Length: 374
Image 1 (cartoon, helix red, strand yellow):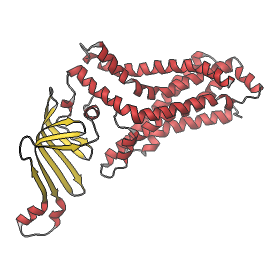
Image 2: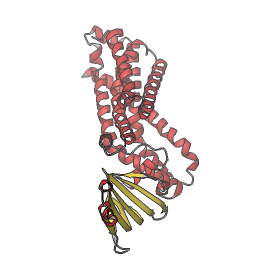
Image 3: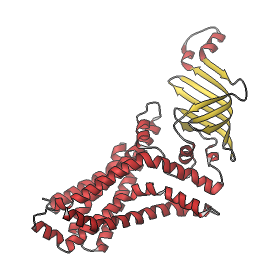
């Protein structure tokens, strides 16, 4: 316990420094290209928007902050011969690394929880607030004349009212095998729990009926049009329930280049949903594996950090250099793997886990062979 407290005192300041430094760099790197559109924005609103980006930046940078902390801590201990003294006293290197393994496990578990419960909300707010800061609107107008997935439906609308976020000339459609449900509405608004349509007409078409031979056109039409419902008056409305919020839709489909708003659970459901297209399932699978691979990199990078520190990181400059090289290698493998997975060139799990697998295996080799772990 004395040893663990000593290692924590050595490593935690560096870990906090790395988290603040790397997270700030990530947030600034996404903000600087957009700074030209941020004019006349209240400082409090801008700071709130920047703070909402911190959870996503934390998940991305926590592994490299842990990597830097391990390199600096073990490098200093090795340079001062403290590791040698510990081993001479009967404390094996693997026992010395236990506290970092626990930190890595806590970081991985915390990042998984953030990915599933925090990021869907904060990422949605980042995207929706961006349009409020820059256009004084919600950004819903950016979705006009697109086919937007809305749960089991597809949504299309011609235009919006930027002041009220009301949609005009709306079409909602859904397929169930060979049955097509189409709803047209003069206008619609998003509200809590779904999309409310006004002045609508609903039609359900059974396309399988076209294969049934019949000589009577009226009977054929009756078999084809299974349901036909028209609003009885302008006050009657139809509510289509959906789990997606307006902020999530704006963030995902407004073209602002913001992070995805889907949680681990939602990404898994979509990648296993046979009703979606192969491309949609692949995109969901890429997101699902990335949301897993990034948090577990907290453990992977520690596996390679400990032997590198013992073997090479005898100074702060070398430790920073090694941290940069390993970080670039991991992000390069992750990015290239994701691109290959998105294009269908490799299985999704291979592309997204390549960085963890390659660096993890190399780290185990260094631990077991080069450092003679015992």
